[in-house]
Image 1 (cartoon, helix red, strand yellow):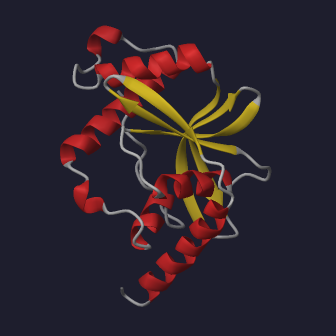
Image 2: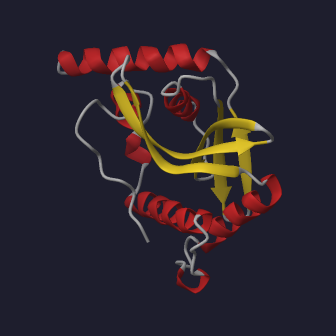
Length: 177
């Protein structure tokens, strides 16, 4: 299965900015969870491309991949891109969004997550959406072993908070904090 894309040179990445601004507490991220998340992303990538080999899917991630299949079957998103690299030149950051999709006639960005929700996730998808010249919807798709939950992030103030995080992260970096 393909690995998550490595970090590239250039402006800082969305998730790094949010962590540097103090909005993401990475101390709770365990290696097992990170590896499972990468495996889920890889399997969903293959599924979206119509190239998944179900017998080879790791049993640890299989329930979540099946929930992603349920999402595809029930919501019927049109997948426009997978792991798309994006850059916001004005605010000097970059990222790699999981999916750009059309759901019920609305184009937007979709980030695939585990079952836990956190406030910073709305900021992450706002930062991805701000890399496009037109307004996009923002969703996080939370996969668990026994279901999925599609969350639309509609709070427009997320953009202001996200852009403040860019400024705060740069200030902290410049001052060695």
